[in-house]
Length: 319
Image 1 (cartoon, rainbow, N blue to C red):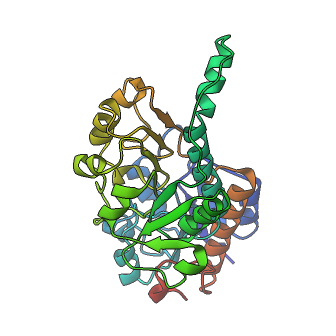
Image 2: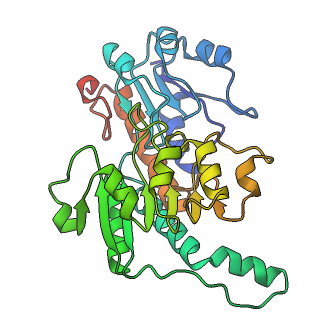
């Protein structure tokens, strides 16, 4: 009996992937950079499953080129690269790894907050340069944390902030029924910007949130405010953030995501002293990436057998 064929668009190959070889014929991209679009469409022509990566645009063109697809999965939470409606219309379930990286991302985001407010990175730079002197930062205790996007990661960050003695406010499309349990107060977007000492962005990227933070929004914030983006780079207008930092409209920013991504070496943001950037490492722990890979593989294998995907975005198409 012929084994089902799956295509992997990523060069990443982990030990956990090897289970696929027991059940499938695997065609994997190994070259530098993203797989060429034309080659990917050629490979998908007779594929039963697609193990995709976030740099592949899954649209009508790709789906039309893959008439045998039974399942698509990504080892990620975000799926801005995927036309979910197009998948659903063709009866193709799409699986992500929602829920898996919550604690890892929350740890990084809160770690960035601590790093900024206590100037930890600046102290290290001084020591490396042979200077041993105090670097003064800010206490978190008693400060107000404003969270934009109180989903699973937002609530996990709120728990960490609560332990640190912070007051927590948040803004969502709608109020959470359990916000009293979380210890957070729902406020309007404008109110959050006006009163928060620290603003953390954890909202999903959508048409409503794209470019949400621009010149007007940074102008509403305190000039002592700390700004952290752990969601998606395109939620922030990069030029407006640069101007706000350069003109001290806000005190400091930390980004784990940028727009564009990666930032060019000569990007103006990198010339500023009041910014700290990490290379999109929110879920980058060994344990978390292992679990994400396992969940994605579980989605692929279930879909190939026309069984319900353990984690499915478009339940209407789930088996």
